[in-house]
Image (cartoon, rainbow, N blue to C red):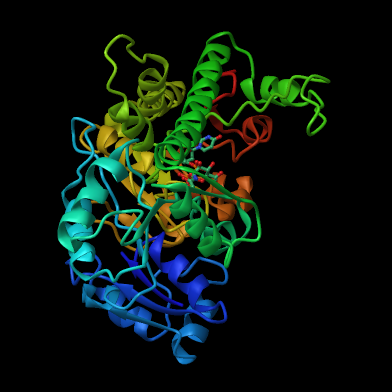
Length: 447
Ligand code: SAJ
């Protein structure tokens, strides 16, 4: 089968690599020569992964490119003789949290101009419920002169990738395939069964679109719950991380929920970043048109999570105060730019929000990250040694593994003032205090 994957991003690259590594498949990746991403075309055609930290991806790409089963082009003409076209372009939200559909509509039209009769078109981009039917289908039909479910098959099948597990998740997590018609769905299920070893569920497009968004909104609400419960416990002088352990210790038997109600309180932290959670709840709400009911919990969870960098600033001011320092006198280092531990992805990272909250008031703020060398408008320090040298306050904003190895005695000697503010539960409060540090942590009691 010939597969065209449109959009060489976090979703398209691993998908193209996995299909190209599957016997019987020839894959063409399509990537426009944009300022931000055009460089990936040459890199991928050398069989090199744009995401260095991703396990397996580099070897998959080099094997596929040298084996001739994958190449990348900037021309959508490659869709012309494809048996399946997978669209993985991103759909961002604007300042008003509205989805920006222009690029998706444009790409759908371009694919429609080229798609051949009998082909399968699969949309993987995360979109509000109803968009595949209302935007993608008409664009494909108008441009191709064919009807979905007749001249070509149309499905919506969302990805479940996460940085650090791009390839693994494609191969081993269940896949949902929403078809415009039942026949479309079965064609899509058959297609994805080639690469997915877990269950592949067929359904309709709106159900699949909603499932993706509900899955991420669910996680965002659960994180917001952990954050708010941590703030409440902190205000009561109770250690939330201990409370969380006790609650989550409730045993549960898989498949027997009535035996014990399952508990899975999430982690409180410095905030919620990445490309999924800050966006997807808004896409879910955008798809909701009925005005008889106004959602409150899902928007409120976004407000709670977006306020966490502000909570971190409050902890920083409080901790510096204990050392007799004002914010304006303090030289601060933020540990971790990535939006989550051990990834080089800094999209919507809470560290950037906290940096903006501090940069005009603190004497100096810099950011350390083991994976990110530079970032527009942010002073990055590569070496941990240099990063903590003579600092008045160390702030953990990302749970990179390397931070767990920091020796507190070494740190005490390097820093000018012994102040730690821990946004990702990396340090042990008691050990820090025994070493003479002023410690504050999200979810940890102040004293
Ligand atoms: N975070 C917390 N507390 C938690 C979990 C996460 O503060 O308990 C923060 C992280 O630090 C990060 C943000 O939330 O800033 C997002 O973290 P994430 O682990 O949810 O990572 P994502 O954004 O890659 O989420 C993806 C989602 N999967 C897809 O969209 C396919 C999400 O639904 C998955 O649950 C998550 O990966 C995963 O479990 O790996």
